[in-house]
Length: 457
Image (cartoon, rainbow, N blue to C red; front, top):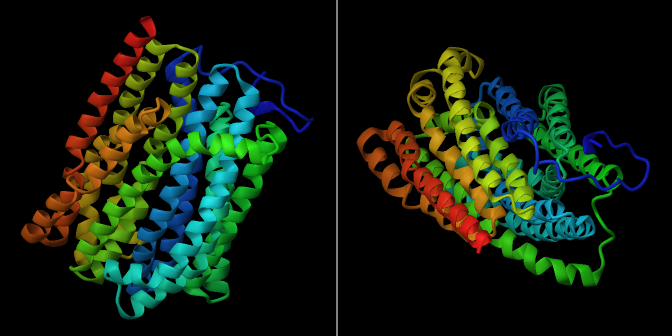
């Protein structure tokens, strides 16, 4: 029975692990395709936010969203790290045929996500103003970004729960409903944006309200799919939480550290860009919205390969697990090439839509035409990180991502800024990721070969 076709008739019957047989390329493309639709939809919702706000003709508002996005990226990355912990433990349990254990782990993961996201919300909300100052936001731009975040940060818990639920759905192979979670969020966001921004005249405050309501819609559907459709969350108990939280935290802590490395690196780039004026920050904010839309399939790929590798790892299919990783790298290269072509051809349209000209337009043009192909190395790093997390080597992901965010970012950005201004900052940020993407792939193949040898002993 296809788990994606189950209806609400009570407990879902146990189904055989989906990814341990059949075409690996088909599994990767289906999981990535459905994930990409959902991710790109939510990223389009974010893009619509900044597009509608750019129509207000106020550069300070667009720059404020750019500063705010750096902090939101940080909080979202923590939510992603918690969802990785759920996927890394639920999918091997399903692959090994231990459904009761998978249900208990899923429930514990949801409770851990709720507790951690509430604590994070309080900390970030209190620290919003000094964090923005640290990024270089000043004057009216600082105040607009502060108000935007004060409204949106309290909606982190529903977003984090929706992310963890998505990981659980992917672990059981229900790519369709995992996609629906983000589709619902995007549809609600895009539908409410014009009403709050223009009809009510709330501007950037209205954009934040619309995004918050979209997150509530996401978590409502996500929990329905996990609890009612798949019956994949056992009733949480104190004893279960005490047993499950240590192994979840063993993955979640390094996964969270891994994921916050990227927004920390991006925050550094934002601060470096800020030295070149609000126009450069506005361009960086637009590029930050273009990247996930153009490369949404690669983000989806990194989220999809974990359950596929996890089920085969749990089933002892080590050769099949290695082939899945190789195919995912090929798919990453193909998606990057397609995105590059689309960005090159669509540059003029992007500049027209966002009403950009002068130096900000040159920055966007530089990224689209010259720098975007280098995303293939970041994609390889993302895919390798997903494999490390699933195979119990989350610490490797942590070291690689922090290496990329520091050694692979700071010296390159500093040198680029001195030599070529804002253009050099963008170029340095992308060039610095090449070595770490290649190193991650090499280490992942070594790990898989070692696991295969150990299994033969």
